[in-house]
Amino acid sequence: MAFNLVYKGPQLRGECWQQAVAEALPDANWFTWPDVPAPEDVDAIIAWTLPDKALKTFPNLKAIFSVGAGVDQLQPDTIPDSIKLVRLIDPSLTQQMQTYVLSSVMMIHRDHFLYQAQKAQKNWQQHKVALPHECSVSILGLGELGKAVAEQLSMLGFTVNGWSRSAKQINGISAFHGPQGLSDMLATTDILVSLLPLTEETRGMISADTLAKLPKGASVINAGRGEQIIDEDLLAALDSGHIQYAILDVFKDEPLPESHPYWTHPSVHVTPHIASITRNDTAGHRLAENLLRWQRGERMTGEVDKTRGY
Ligand code: NDP
Ligand code: OXD
Image (cartoon, protein in one colour):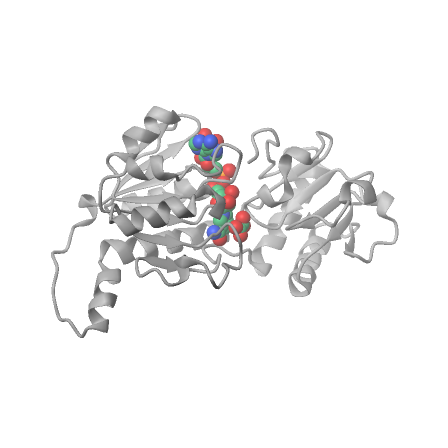
């Protein structure tokens, strides 16, 4: 089967990926949206978000490839059963997420917020240093990214917990699942990290109720999706001192609006959705490998269960 592929996204990435696909599948036809001469012949779209009315414009679409690890922006529940939805799984995404979470955990664990504030006052004051095993890091989501992050932190000596929908056994990690599992895990957490996908179940789950189950002085890192946190609840918990610090990479509205209190809050560190960025040089090869699997009739890496939403 000679695939007809439509790419929607930045030009440089398109050129890199077109080349990677051409090397693996010389017969594939690559079009860059909106320049698509025969929309009825299109087999697959490669995009972050779909063009308007894509399902009508491309009536014979068989697959949609997200250019990122997440698919919430493609609204999985609106995509018909006949169309495969595929997310990006790439070791380069996993490695970036490991370094993002590790650096964020270290920022909290080694008191960099505190020393930054002391520096502003030229205050030379030493504080007790906790050892890694005295710091309990809990990861929400033990998928491609969460599991790798948990394993790395565990290797460095942190006490690591993880929470997922299904029960898991991971060496060196205390794994929890279900609502009671979440409550039990939160009660022993110093640093809570979200690496969950955004679904109807995870939207708003980091609420006042969830935060109240954390011990006083715990911190929050969010590299999942902004809508998992109820911002007002997190800000109230920070202001009351129940939550000590928040390191946030993802937001309900991106770019984060200038007027948002996160920008100026002394206990909040903001990064602009850079925890793990799709790479032009590696991800095109993952796409090409998946197209080859599809051509051979095999299951592709990262096929999404659209009813589950991830
Ligand atoms: P996966 O699909 O591999 O893993 C998702 C994990 O979340 C699984 O362990 C799953 O449980 C768990 N989960 C999902 N829903 C629930 C629920 N309702 N209750 C408990 N656990 C749940 O995803 P990835 O690890 O690849 O990516 C996770 C997310 O990270 C992405 O969806 C995206 O939003 C975000 N991301 C952010 C980036 C950034 O730069 N900030 C970059 C890349 C991704 P189970 O294993 O039981 O199915
Ligand atoms: C992704 C992201 O899902 O960038 O890849 O958040």
